[in-house]
View (cartoon, helix red, strand yellow):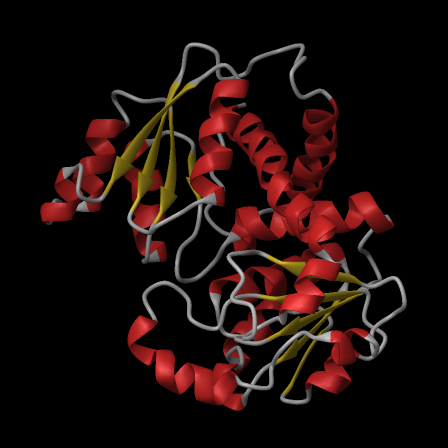
Length: 298
């Protein structure tokens, strides 16, 4: 049994195994020789809205032979204040695995501790490990090994997606440049813990120069809606557009974890020009999460 709680504590060997297995699950979709979740029920506990995450996990669980059970915060007693450890101890006696999309990283970690069943972080305020594994798989599928390459993250560099990119850079040996206003840059303490070849700047042109990947995320993450006006004012200008793409390598990939807000973190023209990559990246959530669940249940 394994947990995927954050990339920070995922061994590099396991990360690389998940990526290798993802290619097999994608290739063999519809004709898997084994169904590792056969006879199992996996709970999806979501406190945050979702399109790609819910869809890919529900489909993935079914394709691996299991049954998904979706539980929103309003469906269960967590929504009325039951401690996460009590919910975990009940669910651990009834289901075989859990996928949790919530706010506090501590909740996912405590659930894993008390439930004693495979637990997967499907997004917290601290990390989004499934997304970054899908992103890296997409790059490697199209361009080969990411080792030694350069990823430029443009926008809110202190969000959960940027955090997971930071941990991945140190584990897989690629360079990460984060271009963000000073207020939205990752903490020095996080960068020190992560190690790796990571640079932070407020200059988006410098970050994009010669990059192999230009990557962005929404400026207003879930739970940050009260900061909308301030965030838009501060982050305006931190946009992936045609002028920025010209600074990257000629074959650079433009990636976005979606949903995309055209005219803010990316413009319409650039998103549509790179839609094949962006929506294959979304599809790859399904394949990488099947590999994660197979690894977690083993």
